[in-house]
Length: 147
Ligand SMILES: CC(C)(COP(=O)(O)OP(=O)(O)OC[C@H]1O[C@@H](n2cnc3c(N)ncnc32)[C@H](O)[C@@H]1OP(=O)(O)O)[C@@H](O)C(=O)NCCC(=O)NCCS
Image (cartoon, rainbow, N blue to C red; front, side):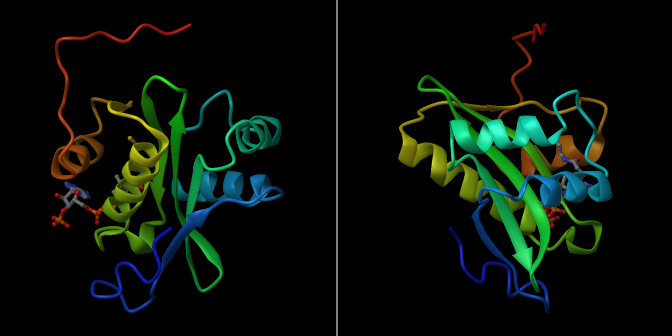
């Protein structure tokens, strides 16, 4: 999706592309190493199902052949949803998180989304500052119900 993005901010260039079939294990290992908050759907079946359901949804950032960032940009036909934004610790604060969000936004806009949402842990100050800095609006007037 994005080639060479971020070269101005890090000596190791990264690129962003869609994940391919067969990469579920690499992605799961990256999430675990990057300290992404684990969820009940963090297993190979779930990632493979996502890739089958929407092959464009999972975006990976790569540097020197390693996965150094991820984001899921999911389109359900009604709204875009952004999940699993994670950046390898050594690549943080270099613009990669922003580049991943921009790639997710581009993918969702091209798919037809006019509205998108991201679920963010409200007590995580870093994540909250990041999403505000990325230009996303913190909606306080809606509650989230889950099941
Ligand atoms: C949150 C996360 C994705 C940010 O990625 P990143 O590549 O470091 O982000 P960027 O370099 O693009 O930062 C963009 C802006 O976000 C804000 N930001 C980023 N990290 C921050 C921090 N630790 N504290 C406060 N603000 C921060 C800053 O405003 C920054 O702009 P600046 O560099 O001009 O100051 C990364 O820290 C991460 O993977 N954390 C663990 C997983 C996680 O929390 N994911 C979010 C789930 S919703």
